[in-house]
Length: 205
Picture 1: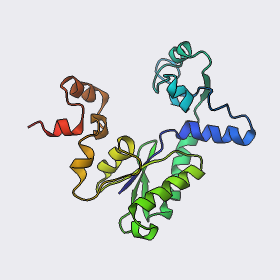
Picture 2: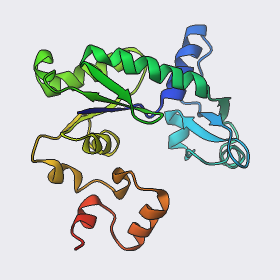
Picture 3: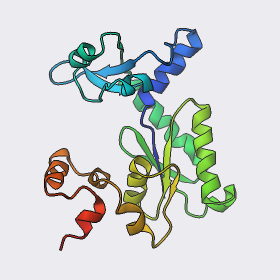
């Protein structure tokens, strides 16, 4: 099973459009995509300069503008992002016969029997990463025996993580508790109890 995480789809889609029109901001100019929140606009996505400056997803735009007055703000095209994910879901079937969306920023693929066609698992993941790069998209990719393990490694593992049969514990135990797809309240409670990683939780009777 291969999981593909596209952490900056909104920003990278917008940057590509701006580049085509010659109006893309310089790489060192902090920029953020925003979306509607319960108490006003919130940060939806950021470029690297904004992340380095401390702009955080989910934070209120007014707070981030106070922190960084020169932050460029653009509204995210949420509908466009969803449509792009739908298209990408079918596009990735060049590597396998089945794929599906996995949340708003992820794809899941059943690559059983496909890796050898690309020269092995490592070569297949590298080819996927390169193909997404050509589209102007950053893709974090992982392969594992199960959907959950692939999801966790794509988001919290090393670059192009590969987890073979029998390696699940070894690969997942060092990952943070968030990799179990737990809600924020549960993760906070686990941290208070000192259970910061999957391995620490696994050791609890």
